[in-house]
Each structure stands twice: as structure tokens, then as C-alpha cells.
Length: 430
Image (cartoon, rainbow, N blue to C red; front, side, top):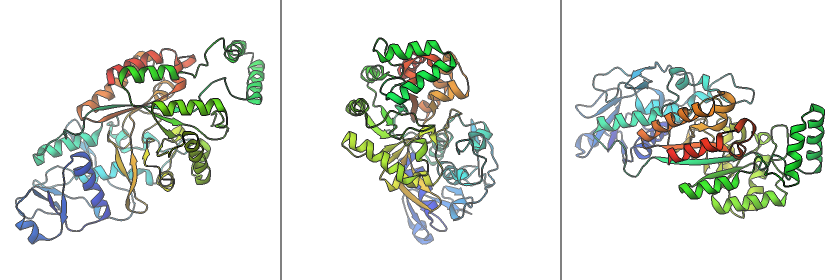
């Protein structure tokens, strides 16, 4: 398709690449030459202030022709079963809002570059998101826009090459609850339990240490069983940071942990789970990536931040500097749904430098801790909420990415009933 535009910018290129090549899997080419556009005999459309004559036309907002980062007047309005932003006023316009600017605003995470009140960990809060405020966070709104745009352009709405996919991912914050902690951590834990009068915990810890019970975080056999039964292709994110207040991982120097990592690497893809302490610390981040790469004896190219702690654009810039190709952090800790409004992977656009980067962002829709720890939802209602989001992804042939932890699948303490729930989720999802 030939697209007539008043001028070509990096933002414009990214937005049209995202819409046509990434979402609709259609080729396109820009032109600013009116004569070439007029004489072109193939599919064509115009994007700008006014149509040239009777061609398909999308009226443009200013966003894709700007270069600065500033507050945007989104002017949300009802559109089909969701919402639209950046409304335009033209009877000739394909869509009643600038779908290219709207998509760019969401997937570039434009709003996260603006001044916001962050949570205690420095994270962008879902309550600050326009999608949350519009009540559509649980819907892949951009995917839905694309289906309608394709219909109006008379092209295939759901590319045949893109099918619904269930993607299992596991964050390994700490491989074991009691085992392989070392003398000082184990002794300190016993003393704390004693001071707290928690004799059940002392008994439980002792039974695990003398191998009379399985460690409550050791759910790896269960994970491998599900992988084989449902033909899953999971991705594991391994914490390799040093011990700290918010980093409770096993030391990467422990042979048991090294062997576990190698075993996981034989069953699945493995990525880095950058520690809480490595946040905006490129030296520490590089060290952690190198630790994991050394154990696996291969390059590490995938990542998801511990605590989902990231700051745009610096967190992603650091990953790119380390040749990380894929990041899976794009989601919220405290709410279900689609942080970028889309269910499928997309390239990170660095607004600060105004460029499309090599980093692919893989959004996730649901995390186990969101339901149990933030929303305080029981097992039965969790299943209902998760499958509802999953159904939304099925409608658009998207990717449903689920984030869970080995601790969760151990099924003890606050996670009682979750291994059974997870099996049901996988069975429903694949």
C-alpha cells in the first residue's frame, strides 16, 4: 500500500511499521509526492490534514509529527466495545480517531515518560495509566482497533500467520525456601523463628533440611511434567544477583543452583531476572548477565526485571547495551491487563532518542502475585478472572503470557490450591 503523508518522521515510520507490518502483516511505502500518489494504480491511502480526493483517508493528529515529549490531550470517547483516543473530526476519515497516533502513544509508553507519582519501588502505577482510567485495561484495545481498521481498509483482519498462543513464563526469585542457603542464613532463620515462637516453621525447616520433606519452592518436577503433558515452551527468568533486602536468591556459586540452572536450560529457554539491586546499575546488571551466561555456556538474550521494576527509557537502554533482544517486563504487579494495550510482541521505541530499537517487548497479561497478594482474590475467583482475560486474547489471535513463580507452584502457605489452579489454567489456555 502506498501512503501519502505531508512529511516523514521516525515516529511516523514506527507507528506505520507497527500497524501494517507488525499487526496487520501488510506492506506499505510512504510518499510525499502528490503526482506519484495520483498516478499509482495499486492500493493506497492518505494520512494527514485533508484527503487528496476520494482515496481512503485517515485524518492525523499532531503526535507523529512532533519531536518533543509533552502532556497530550487524549479526549477519550466510546468506540465500539472499547474506547478511542486522539479523536479527529472528519466525515472522510477511516476511523473517528487517529489510530496510528493512538497506537503509538500506547505501545511507546509515552505516558511513562511524563511526570508521575510512582509506587514505593519507583514503578509506574496502573492508576496513572489512561487505559486504567478509561476502564479498558483488561482488553487488548490496540488489537481490537486493528481488527476494525483492517475491516475498513478491506484487508485481512487476523493474519493467518498469527495464531492465538499461550506462553508460560516462570520467575525464579529463589529456587529453594530452605535448602542451599548456607550456614549463616540457615542459622539466622532458625534463630528468627525461635525468637518469633514459630515452632511449626522450625519443625518444617528441619524436616526439609534432613530430606524428610520436599522444599516448598521445589516445584520444578511439576513444571517439567506440565511442559511435557501440554507441549509447553516455557521461558525461565533466573535471579543471579547477590543477597540483599529484596534479593533472596540462592548464591550462583552453589553447585546445586548451577546444576538446576543447567537442567532448566535443557528443558526450556532461560533469561536473566535482573535483581532489585541492579535497577539502573549497568555494572551490576552486566555482572548478573555474565554469571548466568557462564553457567549456561551460551548467550543470554531474554530478560524480565525482578519486582517488575523498570524506568523508561533507561532500563531498556541498559538491556540493549548488553545485547538483550527480548524483554518480558511489560505488565503491572498490582493489576491484570495490558500495560501497552496490546497482546503481541512489538519493538521498543526509544522516545528519548526518537528511534526504533532492536529490543522486542513481550507484554504479559496476568501474574500470580497480582491476584493473591495485591487483589486478595481466592483460587476459584482467580480462575474466573484469568480465563476472562485469556478469552479476550483468543478473540484477537494474540499471545496470552502468564507470569508465575516456582514458589507459587509449590502450593504451600498462601499458595495452597495454586498448583491445581495453574494446571486448569494451562489446560484451558493451550
